[in-house]
Structures are given as structure tokens and as C-alpha cells.
Amino acid sequence: MAKVLSILALLLAVGKFSEALDNGLVLTPPMGWLSWERFRCNTDCKNDPENCISERLFMEMAERMAKGGFKEAGYEYIISDDCWLNKSRDADGFLIPDPERFPNGIKFLSDYVHSLGLKFGIYEDIGTFTCGGFPGIAGHEKQDMQTFADWGVDYIKIDGCYKDPNTFPQVYPDVGRYINETGRPMVYSCEWPLYVNSNVTIPWVNISNTCNLWRGYGDVQDDYNSLVDIAEWYAENQDVLIPIAGPGRWNDPDMLIIGDFELSFDQQKTQMALWSVLAAPLLMSNDLRHLEPQFRRILLNRNVIAVSQDKLGIQGRRIVDSLKGNGVEVWVRPITPTAQTVDATVFSFAVLLWSRRDDGVPFAVSNPISAYGLTSKTGYFLRNLYTNQDYGFFRPTDVLTVRVNPSGVIFFKATPVIAG
Image (cartoon, rainbow, N blue to C red; front, side):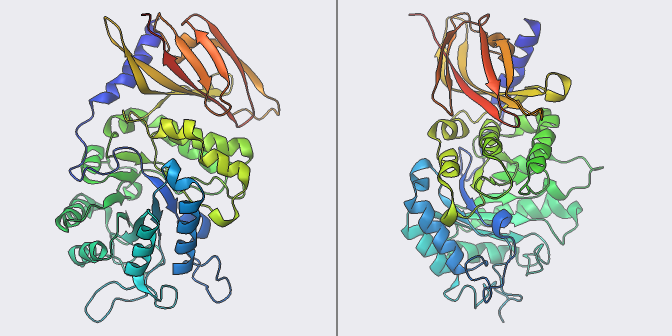
């Protein structure tokens, strides 16, 4: 019982985070599409016009997102990453896009995205160059933020290449101030902690007071081991990361790679569920023009999206490490609806059982639901969020038995039942 109470205390303590950023944006994790993981820095429009970083690419992705059910499910941002720029600024020092790949300019592209009922995001870098070697914002910070505002940008991602990380505590907040001074609401995504030397203490509270979301670990790759590596880092650092996250400020484990090449069907379900438990941004990086129906269903699963977008904004926690037991991890996240008893507020929970086993067969997991922090004496109603299977009513001592596929998940919601 003492262990269960400590789990619950750790989960609910994160509700004491400070108020959201002054811009009032992304009070739930942002959802959308980002170009980098799938399309990288492909600028060869002559030989690969369908896949190069260009006006055409972003317009086509925006069309698919607006007309394919994604907008209705909550995906709203179309975001460019690196390599949209011309190699130099214009004569007056203003940023300009590559004139061949973006012949109509960024304002045209932004207006087109807005005409579809979506929002537009753009990439830059805090240093003298972007990571891809294009002009960075160093020395032009205020001018560039005003340029983005004039172009109708809604979301700005600022990378951290070609700049001394020791200057980040000054320059990243400066950029945030310049964004606010434009008067245009623009989400501020930064990569401040990603570039800080491992021997230096990362100022997490300052970062969460500066940016709406921030990358803390390496880039996701189209590979299951990359996904595992990122999840492990977030679990190992959860005691630091959970308290700084909440409405308007989010830890960002990087893009969704659902619909790309390397992950199995089960592994893609794993990423979607895990990112939802982590209260992570749901930013797809895939080719929406060629998305298989089964992967589309994962991305549009309203049950899982509801966990991601839960208004409490409490980031979930790993409570059972697979490496210290039977190879199945347990992650839990407090969510709505809540119920009120005489003594306390009882939360609903999203519970994720993730098999990191590789023995080739589904593994049976049997535990009383109290092992997952579900301790309300009046019990819970359990439902599988992927299959919609109703497990039924359980009291804390009742045992739930499920089978988890290798590298897959069982993801269920526990809703408290309060006696009338």
C-alpha cells in the first residue's frame, strides 16, 4: 500500500506547476505536421520534385491534412523545418526563401495554409547559420521575428546550431521577448536544452518559462531503437521533466514517425500511445500523400488523442521499468474525468503496458489494478483505447489479465466509479 500511495503522490504532485506562458498558446500539446524526419534537407527539386523542400510539398501536405480528417481530429500546424531559406539575406538584411523552390514567397504559402483552416510554422536557428548551413538569426533576432509576424507565421521553431550554448540563457529569452513584441500570437518551440553540454546543469525552469515546448534529447530516427532510446531518456529524467511541463509548456520528445518505413504496426501504436502519455506534441513527419489506411487509423484514433489533449496537462510517468522485471513497462497518466469523494478528488488514468520483450509471442500480464495506482475503493471502469474493448468494472484488488505483443502495447483508460 505504501508503494501505491507513493506512486499516486508522485503523479499528482506535478499538478503544482506554475502558470502557463504569457502568450496563452498551446494549452494542450500542439498537433500537426513537420517536414524534417521524413524529408530532411532535400533541395533537389530538379530530380525529385515530389519530395524536395518546396512550396509544393507544404501545400500538398496542408491539403491532405485539411481534407483527410486530420484537421477535425485536432492536427492544425503545417511546419517547415530547415532548408527553406535562400543561402543569403537580401540587400537590406531580410530573410528570403529560396526563389526557385518557393517562387511565391512565404507569405503566399502562409496565406494558403490559413485558407484551409490550418496554421503555419517555420524554422530558424539561434546561431549564425542553421544546422543545414542557411542564414541563422544571430544579429537579426528582432528583425526576423517581425518578418515572421508579417508573413503570418503561427509557430516558430528555433534550433541551436552555430551558437555558444553559454549564451542561451540570454539569447533564447530575448527571442521570446521579440516574438511577443510583434503582437502576433506565435508558438515558440526551442532546442535550448538539446545543445547544453552534459556536464552543465540545464536551467529547466528558465527554459519552461521561456518556450512553449523544447527538445531535450536527440533527433528521432525512423527506427524502433531510436524510439526506445528516447523513451528511456524521458523515463530516467522524469523527476526533473514532469514538474516543468503543463498547459502552455511541453517537453518535446520529437516527431511522430508513424506511416514511415521502419516501425511495425505494433511499434507505431506504441509511439502514438507513449507520446500521448508523455503529454508530448503530436507532430507527424510522414508523407500524407501515401499514408496506408492502418497507419492513418493510428494517427486519427480519437481515444488516444483525447489522452494527449487532456485539459489537465499532467505528464505521465513510468512506474515499472521493464529492465527490472518481466520486460513489460508500465506508464500512467492522470487525466479527466475526475470524481469527487468526501475526502479527495479521484482521477481517471491512462495506463500503458509496453512490452520490450523480443521472444516472439504475446506475453500475459496479470496484476491487481492497484499495481497501476488505481486505488479508489469504489472502483474503476476499464476500456481499451485501441480496440474499444470494455474490460468492465474493477476494484483495486481485482486482477486484470491481458496479453501484450512484442514491442507493442496495451493501452487502457480507467475511469473512477463513485457510488451515488
